[in-house]
Image (cartoon, rainbow, N blue to C red; front, side, top):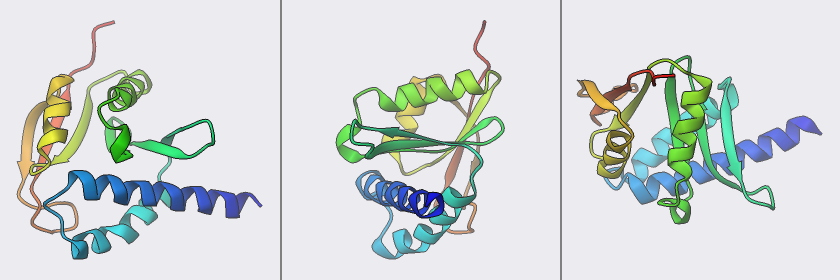
Length: 148
């Protein structure tokens, strides 16, 4: 049953997203997480390119969502942060998208902002609201194409 297996995998990744967000997006309340949950499920079901990091039991530990030249999502299990997986995901994204790479980050997510800046991303813009119109400012970051 490929459809059932794909749905189960998507559910596991969505649950991973929620654990990651609760650990890193401390500015979001329960009602905010509940608001975003179906949007994340929709994204995971429709996104053309999702890369999932799994352990030896095929349990998802993190995922990367890619757009044309952007990182659309990067989330890790809270206990797997700080182990280099995020950096490897960005390196993988850069290999797949060799030009300039962009990412939007919640301004209040200090650790994500620091993470991307450490990898050479710079702020190129800011939005006072997120893509849903909620008052969670986004920083628009860009990393130039890496030299060959």
